[in-house]
Image (spheres, rainbow, N blue to C red):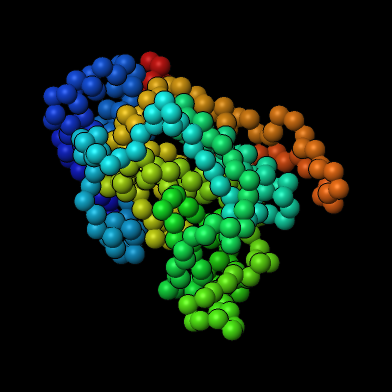
Length: 317
């Protein structure tokens, strides 16, 4: 096991920049925000730490990438930023999660609430679930698992990969060739089973959802500090990633979206503390589903809530 270390000077430059205009922009942040972001280059910070590498299969070792500091992010002419006309994040579910539509809808509401807190100030809308066939997306095949993957020009991830047997030959969504068609045509079983909506699944889903949307905003994989935006090659590595951004990536997102750090962190705490939906679900007419009121499983978020509270304490000194 080893760590990816950077000098205090390197981290300070990556965060603040040497560009006078960007330095001035940083100095205009309120004192609390500067105090928290400055934790990036504090040698003994108990809020942010270096990236830890556990094996040669970890992302940074197997996928060398040039690091992206704040100045490079800010100067990127192709990065996406909200505008008065475009301030909405759309979440499109492909298929259903869990055993019923009610469970799937409830789970997506939790993700919607989390996404609204994470990208504070933007609107998040849920679109009606659609089958894979309705996406009209192209596909690619995972060489290792032989599972079919949607290949699209948007942020996309699979809930199914968080199941315990996803990488085994017993997985019911394993790729199979269709008969009477060309060798390039494939299908996935319609009855594949998705993992149970547990607290750990919700934690993993929130991580991946915000990581992929972060890429849409122009944030590249982080190589500065332990951060949500680190790349990951496998589930164990993804589980080691923090649930939130390092100061350098946080400044990038703040620059793009325009939120105040204090407001964002308070919204994240509120999302965790709202452990269940405000009103019971109503079973649709002519539905065989039972009435469902699901408490939001946030047990896996408790440690992170304590971390967010410590960040708020720094902001509010």
